[in-house]
Image (cartoon, rainbow, N blue to C red; front, side, top):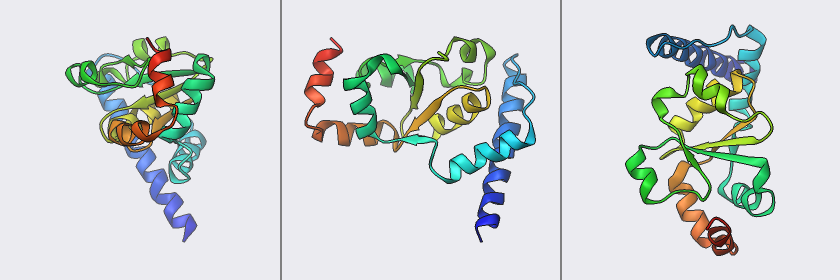
Length: 163
């Protein structure tokens, strides 16, 4: 059964790569050639939830090691202007496959991408992971963050440190 599930995720990974490739061609950028083994490994990471970080884990990182994390907001700029994760940078979702954006992402920090419900950030995770970046998608997206962050005992400290 596990081989069948792994195969499904590998097919999913191939579909994501195809979508990324078509999207990259339409916006005038390119993705690097990716070996099959990398695609299969990336699909398995999706299967094993290695692609995600919880809101609690992100809060702890932001409180204790903010220099080790780079948070990216992939929501529309109007929504991002209202409420956001402290210290996050807004990047246009339409450009997640562009070489210009990928090359600007740090190589020395964990990149945490988030959006509304973790659908856009999962696509960004896939593209950026294939580009060799250390990246996680925020589990449950901004909705989950909003719910968990408000209950976290040190959330106010995080807000104060971002001012």
